Image 1 (cartoon, helix red, strand yellow):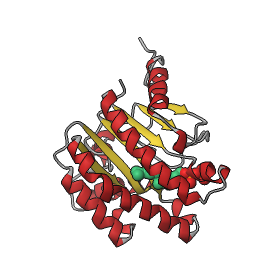
Image 2 (image 1 turned 135 degrees about the vertical axis):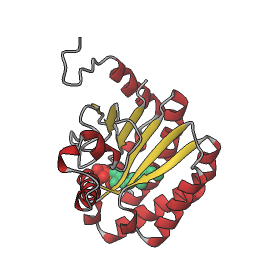
Image 3 (image 1 turned 90 degrees about the vertical axis):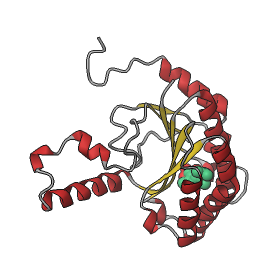
Length: 232
Ligand code: FPP
């Protein structure tokens, strides 16, 4: 079983448009699917699940869609936090929280607080997240320590950079799933996915079911991870 699964939930807009509905309808259904997949991943024994909900590039979308996505996310946390708490699921927001609308910030921070003691699975929700942003904020924190003399440049290690990323303390994703068919990493977990197994499915996110997740895990299990070595 992969310990850490990361998912790029793509295809909400296309799914809605195929049905002659506004894109926001796709995001609403997408949020329901996110809940189902969080619970399914936890039941299947995953320990960490990272979901890409809003990227640093998503600000390029029309303001009405951005507002709609934030409303959907806010409502999701207000509605589901008790359920997540009950299942022992810990919520962590990864991304630049200070750039989010104030109401979203307070709702997500409350969700983090309420679920802090959850031990069954940790779910990272990537909000205003970019892989490049994550690396930059780690490097800045190290640079501050170099400037103050606490760290020498030659002491900077992979472990140090990792420990200051937003996913600090967590293992890197074993399996990275992208729905919606595009074969790109789209500035998701750039550092952390160095050796993640990638699984791309054409299934659009609102159509993604626990059975699709099982299929991705089954395929992952059949692969031979070498981490750059010879596999011996
Ligand atoms: C991707 O589809 C979806 C998004 C960028 C929006 C955010 C995701 C959700 C609202 C799902 C809910 C998540 C949680 C954690 C509750 P797209 O709009 O890029 O689709 P397209 O590729 O078809 O345009």
